[in-house]
Image 1 (tube, helix red, strand yellow):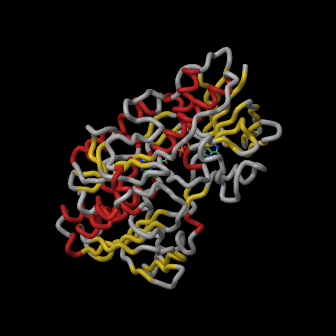
Image 2 (cartoon, protein in one colour):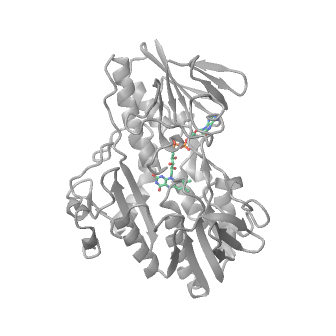
Image 3 (cartoon, protein in one colour):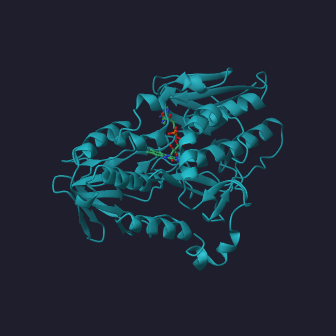
Length: 422
Ligand SMILES: Cc1cc2nc3c(=O)[nH]c(=O)nc-3n(C[C@H](O)[C@H](O)[C@H](O)COP(=O)(O)OP(=O)(O)OC[C@H]3O[C@@H](n4cnc5c(N)ncnc54)[C@H](O)[C@@H]3O)c2cc1C
């Protein structure tokens, strides 16, 4: 009997465990999931908390209850991994041996990485909705906000979910409009990227949507410091942006046990797996997926999910004595809330940037265009998350290789025509 240990029982780790349990006979494999607590939070739901549209308890369920029968759950803090001994040490002294290890321990917020961020004004006029406490506190501040300058700022390029701050901006603009105070509020979106998004066609489309809503987009703005008392964010090039209320996406880091585990990852806690096989170089028995990986794709749940399918296929192959042939193509899929009951869907991979068209085929949800259907799609994702994605069920059209059918691939050769393609 071989043992698979999965570190992290969140968006990525849970479906991997459940799919493996179905694929591998209980006599062949024991599957152990580790997490520090039993509270599985649906993180995308944090977006709605500041607007009073969701509460934290309604977004949280037992981790253990999401795991299929035959998957063991160990509650404990991972302290370090010994790659040579193939063992995981927990903070309470327990040790877990493994034959295969899957690191799915996510990323954590590192607000201390930005000078001044957690000083005076933090959680008073400077907030983040990327944590449960921050999302709740922001709700109160936003409710009181009736005039002045609202700044939404992505503070560094650690690739935390890149769409959520844009979604917050659109939803805030909508909420302020509904409250009748929009004319008294200036909204500015600060990003260290060259534009509103990483790839050009989506960046252009999102920039025009921000402009339509009267949001000032400031790009190439790498924040050096935040002064909550003075209400000012200073860029590393000396530019200063004043605010009355700031909503920031802090820097992200990998889990603290990674730098404590020689050979597992880098000093920031990220695990540099092969982008395609998702194996740790030199350690084919170690896989990593999701936010903890140190690769080029965005840190979003859809990536963790699609990577999980590849990890499962490669682990099942290893159990059968076959080579790990499954490859991750960088498939990323996100709904972006735009307010006004509309959303926009993007679907792309390493080779194909977000394009207009339909998903998952010629008939389907509109891509890269504001639509009410996509808004309904976004709302449906939460239920799919609990009832299909976490249990590891296959959803037609939602799978690891990016579907090419339905996309206007010709625009890759003629990107200038995307404006006309709306
Ligand atoms: C506000 C917000 C909005 C988002 N919106 C979207 C969206 O619209 N679409 C989308 O696709 N994605 C979205 N995301 C991103 C998505 O939630 C993450 O990318 C996804 O959850 C990553 O999955 P993961 O398995 O890598 O990490 P997680 O789901 O975070 O799981 C990691 C687990 O590891 C555990 N862990 C870490 N360290 C230890 C340790 N030392 N010991 C024990 N356990 C440990 C943690 O407790 C956690 O349960 C959003 C995220 C946020 C914060």
